Amino acid sequence: MDPANPLNKKLPAVVGVAAAGVALYWTFTYTGPFRYLAELQLKWFHSYSPKLTALVIILGLVGIAGLIKLVLRGAERPIPGVASPAPVSLPSHPAASVVARPLTHYIRFAAPLILFGIGVWAYGNGVQAGSLQELSADDFQNGNLHARIMYAEVKGRLSEMYISKNHYLYIPMSAKSGAPVQLLVGVGEYQTEKYLHPEADGSFTVQGVADKGLEGDVKYAFEKNGIAVADPVWVVHTGREPSGDKKFGAIMMVVGIVFGVLLYGWDSYRQRKNAAARPLKASA
Image (cartoon, rainbow, N blue to C red; front, side):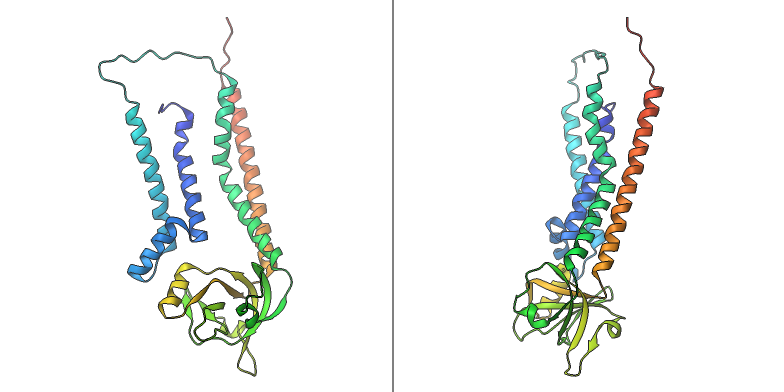
């Protein structure tokens, strides 16, 4: 690889952005090597660190890319005793900058695109959650709900068994004896009196955004304590409202757009500055 090639100078940035993007995707979806490493830590230490696991994956991907580059560099070394041909000076051609531009733009605009994508995802969740619905725990237990996310007020009986993670409690609601848990209530450890409303018959009413999906370590903790969790399982996140998701999504989209405009402006300014500083060659 020619060190003078501008594309090769940007290669570390390309690898870094790609590694971070892949690691974040595996982290948020709890898939791929992230899930394997997380469950390995759960098996050995009964807990795991998401940040440390993601960092290990990023460093591993960068290390693999560095090893590949090292191998390719070794293949390009000159053969001893054979003279290398003199470099041939070729006239510059506009096509070279055209080929390099898409890769450069991808690197520079990866961050604003990610921010904008997170905003679209959050805003979409707020839209899909819809208006408030009155449901019971049995509606979730019977599998009558086919939406992915909804805004609901749910009534049911809470289990005495719960799992705590970072001061956030996951409490089964109306779990039948011997049957996998279909519904969990998520509530802050110090907000139970605010969001868990007791009823006269011993049940509780909770209000929030019900979403499908549960973190792998929480599910593992339930199963370790002899409580089977259905796949998929619903979690009612108390205190969360669709308007909050919409607001957060709109802010993230605006931040992504502004960031992208600033990057585009800076990129245009540098191109004009480089064009003005480039010496002109007189034709013979």
